[in-house]
Image (cartoon, rainbow, N blue to C red):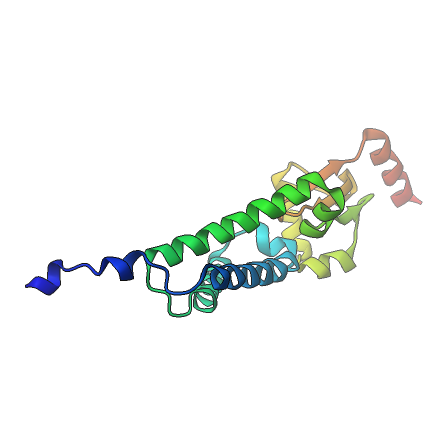
Length: 178
């Protein structure tokens, strides 16, 4: 009965490895995962479907195994969480403070439509089909490509659209007639 109520307090709170090892494990894994996720197509980041969520869970599991090794104390876990939060805050602060760093951390918007014409090379790069793009345009109240001056996929995976002005629409209609 004694084993049910017994708590090994040192094992629970005393870190099992040095702070330096925690720091390096957390740093390497955080930066490696950040680099991998940074270069995924933007559409993969913005819309979290079931398969995307599964990938995130698997990343977390792989990261936990590579960071935590045989850690057993609560303190070990809290130290790693603190390192992850520190890196996240630090990179955000650097991006805010230095625009060049921000360009490395966040992909720029990518042009998908210009003057009513699809840019297939950029769509392939982001793995967006014409049907998927048209769905996003309709959600923003645009039925035809000719009504779009520019459309971009943003860093968060959303699609932003700049509608054509009435004069641009008239010019596009004249081009179709000739």
